[in-house]
Length: 249
Ligand code: SF4
Ligand code: FES
Image (cartoon, rainbow, N blue to C red; front, side, top):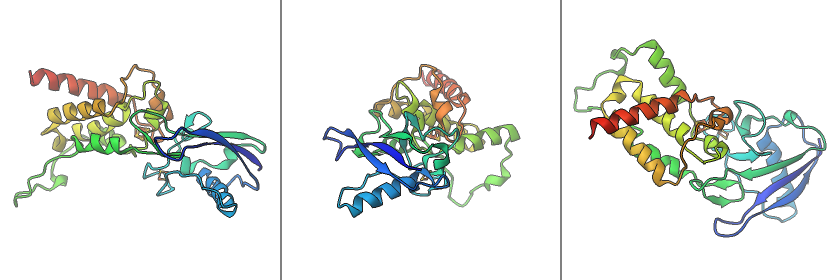
């Protein structure tokens, strides 16, 4: 395939960016989207030009680092798929592809397609953990019974890879789907109940401090999420938050 790429170039967060046109040729349908970007970068390096900066790590859909808006969609056109697992067979010879960074106040651009998602780390730091008694009386986690239904829902919530596509998809740049997945994976387990009230209040407070918008029930987050995190998590977080607010009054 021969393709035209329109790629967002921005040298740093304080300089204005713009779209630049590039041509790539000989792209195989079995290549991943990131391999196609590698070919573009090899071309740029050979010409002595600056390669396009983009985040990636595992390239197998688990680390959540790859974060590109492809033709207006976070992670591109394939449902439940990260950019690193998107194959070029999804595109046609002669296509023009628009490639931009995830856009949100909570994700400032570092360079080109790479954004700073440390706001997510700070939301986790605000409460995404449990305290364990390690004084010699530690209880084996496997000895605590967990209802199968709750274990499954907690596991599904825990599959969130923190990629930020939910924020990029939302017209309000809301981080509710991410935060609610991180609240739910603990709130559904007995080990997570000890600090449950404090956790939901602190994580929601940090989410607001980071500049993410409110949820207005659009649902684009769940639609674009590569791990198909359910909107039920947002409803659960709202219930947790309400009961925590009432009990702390
Ligand atoms: S909820 Fe989905 S889209 Fe949002 S950070 Fe987690 S995996 Fe990514
Ligand atoms: S590079 Fe790890 S999820 Fe895409």
